[in-house]
Amino acid sequence: MNADDSYVNVRPRTLFISDGPIGIGTDQVESLTSYFDRVARDNDFTVGTLLWGSRLAEFEPSFPELVTVRKIGASSLAHGSVCVSAMGLQFAEALAKLTGRPCVPRMNWCLATEEVSHARLLRSHLAWCPQCLSEDKEAYFRGLWDLALTSACHKHCFDLRTTCAQCGASQSRYRAQGNIFCCQRCEYPLSSSPPVRATPENIEIARELGILVAEVTGGRIRISGRAMKASLFRWAEAQGADSVNKQRRLFKVSKSLLSYWRHSEKLPSLQRLIELCLSLGLPVMDVCQGELDPTEEPRPLRGPISKAWQHRRITCARRKEIETELREFATSPFPPPLKQIATKLGVDLSTLEGIDAKACAKISASGKSHKSIVTAVRFERFRQHVDLRISRAKQTGEGLTIKTLGDTLPNPGIMRSPKCREYVAQMLKKARRDQCDPRG
Image (cartoon, rainbow, N blue to C red; front, top):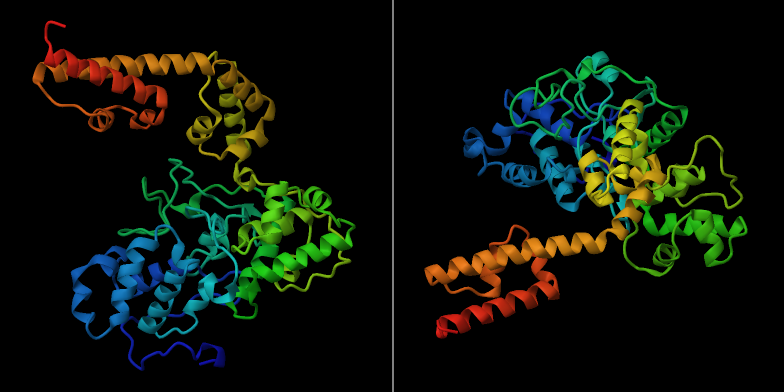
């Protein structure tokens, strides 16, 4: 056992038999969720049996760590928070004791970071390189693929797949039953997905992030959010950005966000800081260690990442489909709001604007011009529903209040409008008056 692994007190006897995480301390390191799936398979379990099955209940008194793994894993595995949260670190430490592998906690980012937020650091679903899965002697998912900013495999220079090539379904981080290397909807092998050549910029980004993942899981680096911010501001001042406005233009962020970074004591987002390094062409490792040379010149080896990092993961075919649908919405006399369109197309709003800014601007302008018409139509539908509901209550003798009537609406949130609440109050008052004096 290495000296840096001694903080985990591993019993001589472990519950599960399994090899250690693959590639620990390298850019090909296995993700924590993939390792948990492999532990289950190596011991002739499924992930569902390991988390909820009654066969392991008899071992819980002897191995209290099993209770921790089952309790945290059942709620955190699907979201991937076992890799970025303090509770996930408890999960990793308990799993390390159950398997006798002290290096497992290193696969959680909390062990190597401080004063930093891990929000949005990981993508919400699985991503994979089909070529890597087909060439592996034992297939597994890499920790690098979990990072939201990683969109390519720098080993094979292919784009990462995020959906099934046959049915288009996204893949959850774990599968309770069955083979995780097959589509969770149609059973199509993930390794059979056709490869798509990645751009040089995305390959370079993946290579640099791979170095960061290797250093973190190898226990060779300690990332401080405060040190990263200080390093970036020192570099900005060395570039001549000695005022807030100049730094805002250099970092390409809003003035309020820049003030938040400078003065707020809240934790900065590690994902946003890394994104900023990549967009400026600065070495991520030097910034993470707080050792960036203030005279470092930006390297023109890639274009700006911008806020819409998801845009880089969209294939050319999918981009054309989104452009076509977006233009159809733009020509519609009453297009839905942009946020609703983005949700329907499966992208975020910034990505949508990056694909076709003119169409988005036209939709926004059309929405503003027709807002009064839409509001009037919605209120008329609301008024008809309220009148019908009160009429039925009169016939049945049911006592209505603003709350009980609002709960029956198709969209209860409309009751937050003062105009709607005032109308309901008037109609209820009128209904009570009619009940007291039927002749009125």
